[in-house]
Image 1 (spheres, helix red, strand yellow):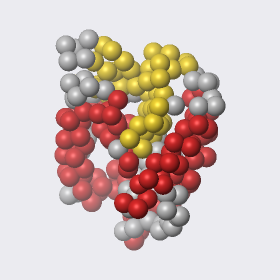
Image 2 (cartoon, one colour; image 1 turned 90 degrees about the vertical axis):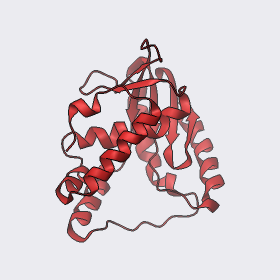
Image 3 (spheres, rainbow, N blue to C red; image 1 turned 180 degrees about the vertical axis):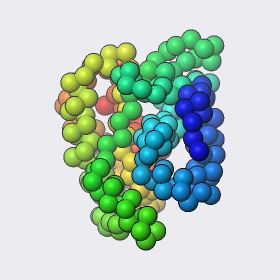
Length: 202
């Protein structure tokens, strides 16, 4: 239901959001494709871990006319970035840290009963569960050379309640201080928090 040709196209951030919305609507109409997407099978892994997050943060750190080209494969970056004239201006490496075992268990429950684990946390505490995974990923990324890339760590939290917004934002600001203790060989680095529609410079 999703092809490499669909993914590897130059799109603006607005076009990326429209593409993601269209794919999600298409997949949700087909129970088998929805199961494959939830399990991250085939190209859905790239779509969920790279293309979808890119659509959520690209508008926050690039001008609206910027063009983004997701690149499949193991070339050391995930996205080529071009200006409106088509000149290359950047590359992006995207990491979306998560608890893989917990995600696999959730997917199994989704397939069996239609919903996964129910998790409860303090107001603004959704980031806490992701913190060790983000730190571990940041440490690993700090050992690699991304000197020609913008490095983006994505904190995929659930949408917060309105009352949580300032608390979650403050926790992100504090957490960024921890991430800044590592030296990254990258043009720049960000913590993207799509549920806040914000990117925090590391």
